[in-house]
Image (cartoon, rainbow, N blue to C red):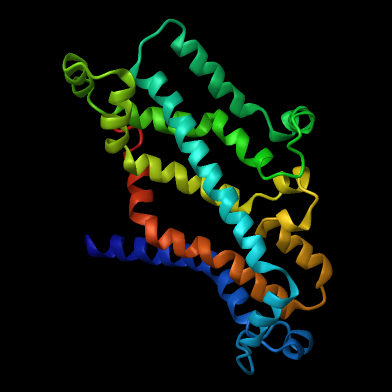
Length: 272
């Protein structure tokens, strides 16, 4: 009796997973199809012949390596800024007692209701006055100012760490920053990896930021560069699919490499 529900659950999981995997599979198969097949028979599943030249031609059509380097710089800077700023703020809300802490945290959570478009124009004016227009710094700098959702996520994880550990460290003369750096952060690696992955994917897929702050093609990341590729080669679907695969593949590999830590960080957040 216990095996049947498990089989149904497994079948349901496989079915739902298939819904997400199938479009990726179609994109992968389309990326190695000849251009003539995509034009004459666009609904065929399997390619008539494997054409790996689509990838080399797409690499020659756009400066993929340059776009990739810009994306890597953008992702690394954003991840560092997010992890540092959000972990510090979360530690202050979770492990330190001060007047008005809960009220300020409620206001912080309330900022999650504000859409990005509300602050888009003031932020653009500010960075333009600072001379950061057409620089990746304009996209990276806001991540050093914290994010409400990530602060909330880390705060919940920090609160699950026994307070007795911090009290013992204080008795030994360790400062608050020392407790944060030497005790809390090492114990919070799953949550930190989760936040880093969330921000990494967000920065990798960010389109509105580069669209707003960048005008030089040499500084475009892959997300915006791919849009430019669509505009220039909209009629060459085989090259577009190959470029899309190269854009998606790094995130897929990253997920499989870090999925255990990512899942652990999600499941342990808020647990006591």
